[in-house]
Amino acid sequence: MEAEQLNRLLVIALAVSLLGSFIAAPMSGGMGMLGFAFGGVWSTLNVWAWKALVQEIFGPRRHYAISLIFFVKIPLLYMMGAFLVIRYPASLMWGAAGFQTPFLVIFLSLLCKQLKNSKPIAFI
Image 1 (cartoon, rainbow, N blue to C red):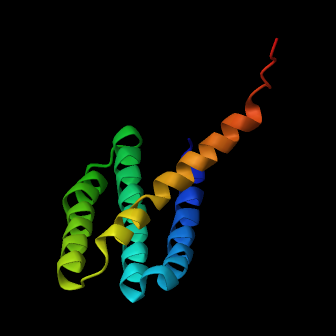
Image 2: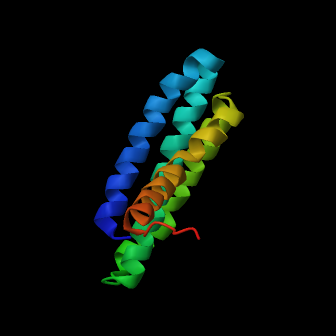
């Protein structure tokens, strides 16, 4: 998967996370909505940060960029996540559901691409 395609999928995953939180609201109340949105946004940002790190390591290898991503961006993301989980009692079950949205969007995109390129199975 190319970087631009992954960026598009991460934007779609962010939108799905935010729209999914509005779907979760009537089923679970405000805490489920907050949990789903937080899980989806955090997971999307996490995938984006790791993508940027891998892109720098296998790409131009700018040491300052690798250091900035690895020692600043990723620890700040994890500290922010821990702080929000401790500070705001959002539903962890809905947060775990929201956490899966970027992976689900990426998986479904790859599945559609694979099914589009596959040949029909001939039964005897």
